[in-house]
Image (cartoon, helix red, strand yellow):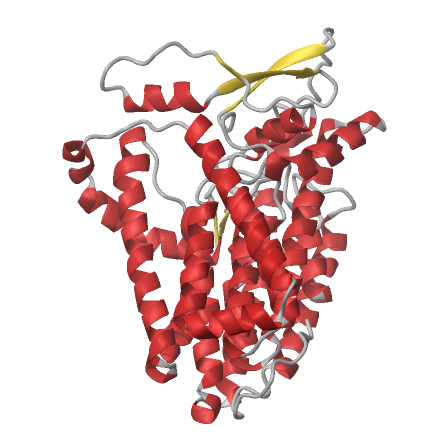
Amino acid sequence: MSGLVLLTTSWVMSNPPGAAPDEDAHYVKARASAHGHLRGIRFLPPAAPGDHRGAFDRDVKRAFVLPSRGAADPRWGCNRVTGESAACMNGPPPVAASAEEVREITHLGPYQPAPYLPMGVVGRITVAAGGSPTAALYAGRAAAAAIALALLAAALVLAGGGWRLAATLVAISPMVVFLSSALNTSGIEISAAIAAAAAVVTLRQATSRLAWTVLGASGVALALARPFGPLWVAVAAVALVTLTGATGVRARVRSSLPESALAAGAVVVAALAAVAWDLAFMPRTSVPWSVARSHLGLAASTLPEVAQQSVGIFGWLDTRLPRWAVLAGEAASAIVVVGALCFGSWKHRLVVVGGLVVLVVMIVGLNVFTQIPFQFFVQARYVMPLSVMLLVVAGDGLHGAGSRLPAAVAQGVSLVAVGLHAVGWWANARQSAVGANGAVVFFGSSQWSPPGGWLVWAVVAAAGVALMAAGAIAATASAGQPPGPPDQGRL
């Protein structure tokens, strides 16, 4: 786990401010939440009939009147979708506003504020202590990363070793670490899904007070993080019942009171609160079936791009891994999933196949009803809570297969998954430092550098990857042996 902490810390500090999807908008939402502003002020006029994008913008874009100290820096993300370095961040800082309050706009206005509070509070404290808005952004990133890392640590402990650990490492892709290191709620949501799935497969095997506690904490985080949270909670519940059986679940509940009751109660309350908020405040702009149907072909064509993003496409989806690295990540996932379908129990096969069908239907459905008509496309992070849960369940199926696959295969898959983090960090650092077409080795020629310089964070990232690799080799050495009780995570 120490390796993952080092790697994520390096991402937090070395990724340029605003170099994550909508990070500036998330910053404004976090600031507003910390100052007690929940939904903001609608300011756009009504859209013309048939103008789906205009109707969407009017529903989600809100203005917040906030203290001028700590206002978002307009330089953040200045190189988005250009392929250029972050050298534009080196320009003069914005002139401080003369007024005590300023109006800031975000398209995340109606999103529920709860998951933004930790990020906003630490940012507000940073500004109150004399820090700059950029320092507040880094502090918010650190808060989001701490939550995500706590959830991932729980997942790794429950995974133990063998194929469960190998599949969990595949699920914690470079994209997951990138999102977990940015000021947003997607990293928290996906990390919570990994932890929830780890708790589910642990409870499948035996009763566990720790697993119930993790399931409660991750379920609450999952329900509150983003609008689809309650749906992912339902998916985890269905997987638990399918893998364990209704009788088994009842037995696990009775043998782990009060942890199981507290976990279930907390998750139900969080899910109901999230549903109530979404029904009350989230927009529901409708798209006729005739319009949606016309986009089915285009929606289906985005499936390969979503798969690539699940491995790692950084920045504003403008910083890509080398093609060979993406293929290696997809191959590692395929080995886990296909292995579970070949060697797992019929219950594991049912969950994996059913989940894959739901995943494809969701990607296509979200595209035709909620994205393409508004001039967007589904991003992998919208559905990754489901895909990572399927990987963890598939790993459990392989783990239960005992010695049918040698340990060398699990170790190879784990090393590929861990090695991709080094490639991903370097690809993102290179583009930030010298642009997509700049020198591969950019020390001494970088046009933008993070606090402390590139060498410091490169060493931290390398140390993190090395520790993760060493832990993965040791913990997957038992993959070819008959399964036993879960052991403790070693990363």
